[in-house]
Image 1: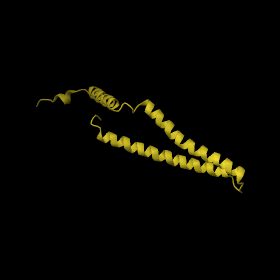
Image 2 (image 1 turned 180 degrees about the vertical axis):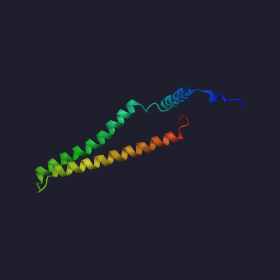
Image 3 (image 1 turned 90 degrees about the vertical axis):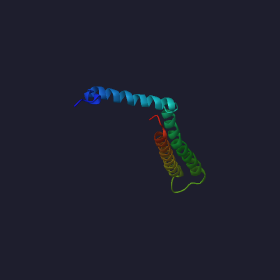
Image 4 (image 1 turned 30 degrees about the vertical axis):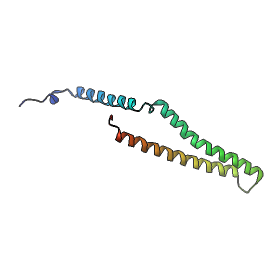
Length: 113
């Protein structure tokens, strides 16, 4: 029985070929989607951060105004600050989930992966 060429390949060579193939796929994917890089990730982190910060600060500012003009037995500032934080975190979570779905859809449809 003759031995197939694939059976004679050294396991280290198989790993090398596999690694080169994996890197080639990554390169093709990065060429195909040039916006999905370091700057995209940093921008996305900033976007998610601001989607939490803005409602939190808006709640705090509104709370300070309400505390000055309509005093209550509780702190409007703390109540609206926490409400803004919860809304901001929910918004960021929803945004990240949608981006993850879009990226997974892209991966499944991309012929270069």
